[in-house]
Amino acid sequence: MMIIQWLGYRMESNTEKSNFYSLCLTDAGEFWYGYTKDQLHGLRCYLSVMEEFISKSESKELSYLEKQSDKLSDQSKGNFWAMNYPVYWEEIFANNLRNSVILLLYKILEPYISILCRDIGKTTKIKLEDMKGGGSLYERIHKYLEEVGKFQSPTEKEWEVVINIYALRNMITHDDNSNEKNEIKMIKALMKIEALIMNKATGLSMSSDGMLSIGKEFCEYALTNIDKFVDALYESAMIIFRTAESDARSKLKHFQEK
Image (cartoon, rainbow, N blue to C red; front, side):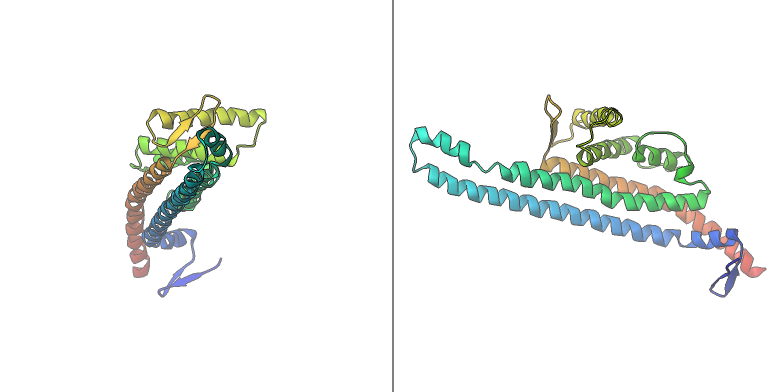
């Protein structure tokens, strides 16, 4: 068996290696929490800068077009605006920006929550993959962290929001799938998105034919909620990690005294 040598202490058993791993949990947890928070802050800045750029660019173009329109007769103005109104700033630039922000939110969140689940698995000897049951990725993680990790936070409401926004994220990613299995998933996703709208998530709406509209306000809403969600995960995780670290230190001291 491979021998790990650390601080003059030889660890040969898996139990001893597990104890050593536990000594690193707090520092690692603080690092990944800080890294994730920095990434979320960067995404918020990106959204703000790009929204301002789009808004100013649209205003500048509209100002130019209004000057051109003023030279026309009232009868010609209608046709002019129908042909020249710059709809692409909102329908293409802003829409793609907001979709990308929702996707990036979970690209930032998923590594953090995956590392949490891995480390909880190390301390409890039960992996996320060992849990039975269906549901989306975040529904399974919710069950795992509450039942195995004994997390007291995030709250049920905070989990619900993150799970529902994840359904929106999946709809953005897989909007071209049309087989029966995916249609069932889409119906479930639409129900979660409707729950967001019913709970007055600003900047999100759905037309009668199922077309979604994501506004700047909803991106800010999603950012704020996931930022708070990460705080809540960190709070619960650190309680567990500090306990595991304390236990590991006691065992390490015992082994060193032998």
